[in-house]
Image (cartoon, rainbow, N blue to C red; front, side, top):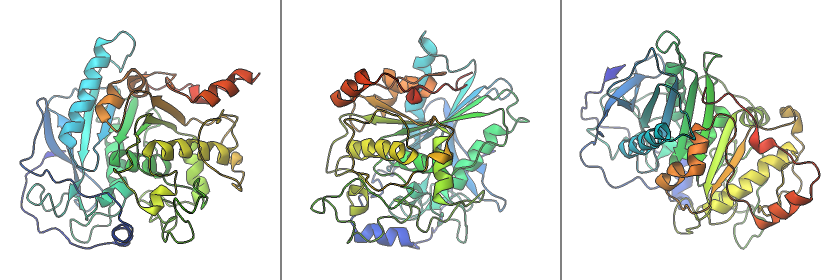
Length: 408
């Protein structure tokens, strides 16, 4: 681990296949515009961690003081499309302080908050050195794509997250580490949701990992099926690339650790502790990814896409989860129930009074339950139809309250 020394870099202006698709379909993942002086919040520092074996590094906001020997829980907070890791470090740091003061949550005796910084090779010039990873236009890091800086690298944003997970899994460095919670909101949640399906396991079996995914604009569908069948909203027949990676698994490049088929990744996703946390008021149709690839996943509202994703994974897995009131037409889905042992570990939590706002999501009671809850996660709001159906079921399915050892 070393302190970052900023230098001017020319960057690489290569535009990959993903970017060409996004430009054609008006994907609203524009790079943020506020790129002034680098801000380092009080109590943090900006360091780099090694990724791979060729000297590349990922920038990370890190506490100024960490007791490695006593640290039990690491929170890795991923920023959104504005690449404001400093802000997201502060959001998570405040949530941790609030949890420590609360009698309802116990994040562990010693916990550390870190926030990766995914640079834009173009707009962050001068803020990273010649070995630090940076990505192409349109926030390409969101999709887990290969960085464009340093020139010639084959490392992706997934590999960067793998490296951070490896760092905290190293029992020589963190002998008492028990939990790693990986968190993302917005653009960061897009990356984190994909990472939950494709990322590696911790190198130590003693490390428990939870993934918290907040308000993503799209998700990685494991099949070619989509919930929107009204061609007036989005036409799957004319939407070129709708099932390409990151929206589906066609042309998924894999990671340094593995490349499997979509069904295997689906099994990995269901058998991991993934909490999808959604703001009920995240309904602005003018923001986020409004490409046909994204709209096919549930319409123009992020909330509805995420509700459809919940229906999709449960129908594909043939769970007994109550789905009345959640949108989506998924006729013809195959039966992939053989990838899980009968109860999926993926859960859905809904914050009733939150829109697309990371502070509202993660500082809410539901959000703190997702971040710090030991065994159960508060599910929050549910549709009226869900409640009516739930009341009439003699067998109450407990899949959304799967017990884990998170937070020990």
